[in-house]
Length: 194
Ligand code: URA
Image (cartoon, rainbow, N blue to C red; front, side, top):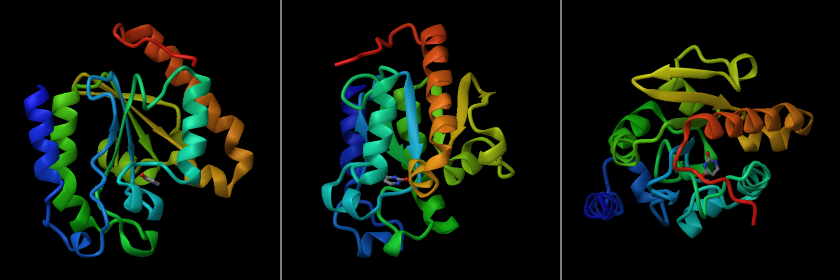
């Protein structure tokens, strides 16, 4: 497992499969516990993530960390966080379909090695890919959908919550729903409040 994970990461760090490699500062492979039972998937690195090489370290990431922490989850202990694409799309545009396609195998392999019980899709790009191309975040956020033994849930992207702060209470309810499901099915996950 260790070997495979480290091997995957070092290959990914040299990826040149799409044009995003030309403008990136860092490949953002992911962060957290690779043995976690809960995997969060965002869209792609922004400016701060590109500079620091870690997902969700800007304002949206701070909000994500706060909501995680409130329900006993954290990137330090019991979840893993990755993105649909590992390199920053210029001007923070959505990753193009061909960029997502070129990158998809890295995430597929991460999912295979982590073997999560729950996958949380942050925003529509991840939800389109993993749940359904018709997924409507505003209507279907917080619902669990089972596929091949994994429970998927779509949530509001934290950047969308920052743009629309009145969504915060509803968005936070999804973290509570997630915590309840973690307590129900994730037998190896200890919720941490430190
Ligand atoms: N938004 C994302 O979707 N991913 C990040 O890593 C940062 C911001």
